[in-house]
Amino acid sequence: MADERPLLETRHLSAHYRGLAALHGVDLAIAPGEIVAVVGANGAGKSTLLRAIAGQVATAGEILFDGKPIARLAPHRISRLGVALVPEGRRLFPRLAVEDNLRLGAYARRGPERFRPLDLVFALFPRLRERLRQRAETLSGGEQQMLAIGRALMTAPRLLMLDEPSQGIMPRLVDDIFAAIARIRASGVTILIVEQRLVETLAIADRAYVMQTGRIVLAGAAAEIAGNAEVRRAYLGM
Image 1 (cartoon, rainbow, N blue to C red):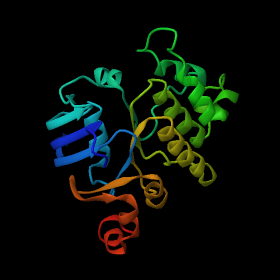
Image 2: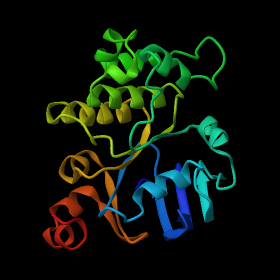
Image 3: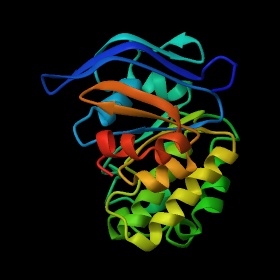
Image 4: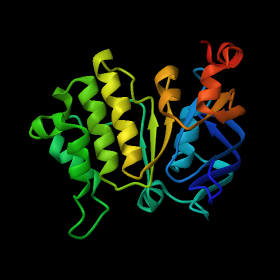
């Protein structure tokens, strides 16, 4: 990681989810401009980690965003600071049009630049421009994921968190999603990604954290983790 101050840092972060301890003393740091992956088996606590950062799960420990504590803030206040979460399952407004879903992403922004992120969204996902009047529920799984990412980008985030962005997507669109993630980083957005497609994820990530039963058990360069057969076998089931 670069020597500059982390954009996001967690210190001794613990959390419960549905009455069970899901995170145990998680220490994590992400520098501005990085793509960082959190990988591990199902039930390792990866999604809970993203929800905790977004303020959706009660926590103990510290969460710092740009050096400022955010662990006790409400989700909408964390969002306004520049943290956006694209949750597993997308959670769109299915009966609203694509355009309405996108515009709702900018609801908390004000001024003439409010909808400027649309330019980036349409550059990344031209399909969305073609389907502006369609209801979200009529889109394919891949198109819905594009819309979910686009809606998050409408908040003009500094940190974009993606929870299983390839889930439920036709194989031919998966490459488009991963290419878009790389382009989002190139636009200046820092990315934290949880994803089961380990080969593709580690190929675009700078660094990776491996989680097991709510703990970070390994951290390092994504290429090193991807290239270590023992690590892949022991922790990632590869």
